Length: 284
Image (cartoon, rainbow, N blue to C red; front, side, top):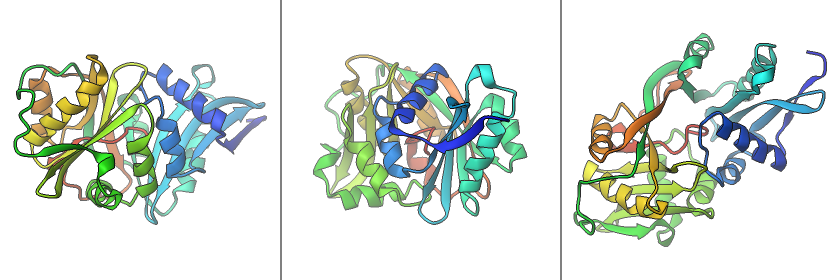
């Protein structure tokens, strides 16, 4: 371990981490790193060997009692040498005393269990160009509006139903950064759905996607997909919401990736029947 040290991530490191995630096939959003930095500026760690970055992890604090682990990557040439476990311990120490969540890729889930994590559900990435289903222009009685036109307090209060802790600063950046579109479904002045689409290296990613019903979810999906320039979209769908899985498969989206949502304690009580797509596999 001589020459190995752990430091906070710089702005340049954040760009590097995005590139590493792309190489792993995770397809992060082009501007995600800016929202991630707002969530917790000190929550990204880099392991350096003789000054060269060889590993990274995010350990982001939300509120007073929740944290999320993500971006756990050791460069292939440096795996199996103990650098990853040192970085892991540093990240978990930063979240000590909190309920911690993560999205674990299949090959690492046994290791996460050894660290006290237990699966709550699987997030299945469904990807493709939506086909068939509801006719264009059929909104089912809800108004689809630019989320930026709504009072931010309403959006933040709605988001808190689906996340274990307030994350207002993150949400503000996540919905408003360049290269993304945020749409809300509104009925009689009440928010019944929210979705964000963002540009990525590959398929445009949609997340979060909240909706009161499958019909509202489909309307939002179609509205968001128009901003993908006819290309494929990808949604990370909790398999604990079978109606969501059935809906997107019926629209021609197919599974391309899977990760287990895991927690160190009891899973938060979330309205999973209205959670059609998680925000991010990296930060929850």
